[in-house]
Image 1 (cartoon, rainbow, N blue to C red):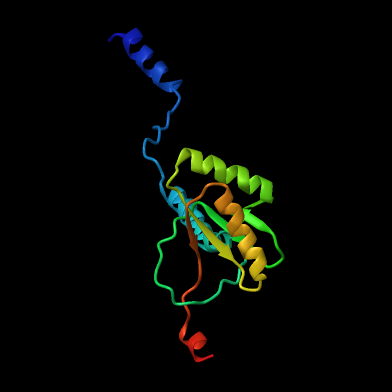
Image 2 (image 1 turned 180 degrees about the horizontal axis):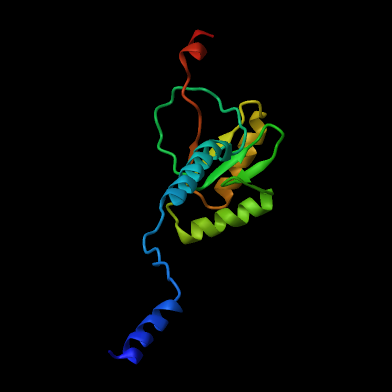
Length: 151
């Protein structure tokens, strides 16, 4: 009998630590939970972020017009002027429109004006837009509903 051979095997086994196998799988459940919570948050907040500028547009049936979300001049009832949802002065608007016409001579600009504004204020804005060199100007209205037709 070989005492040293059997003894070395037993002593190495006695002092060996037990190692737990590493977890190689990714637990995806918390990830999915976080993504679903973020999805719900974005679904709730997105409609609130699209408020834009509060303008009461006139309601007229003048035909459908495809409006792009750019080059929009908005006039609020209190006289505030906006270009693409950013408040501007008349001078700033003139500069921005001149740059626009220089970059794209065929650019179309849309004018959204509150129906409570005086006619002169709307015409003044139209004149400023034309002075900047814009040749294509569209006037934005809302389509009337059945309730509006009854009035």
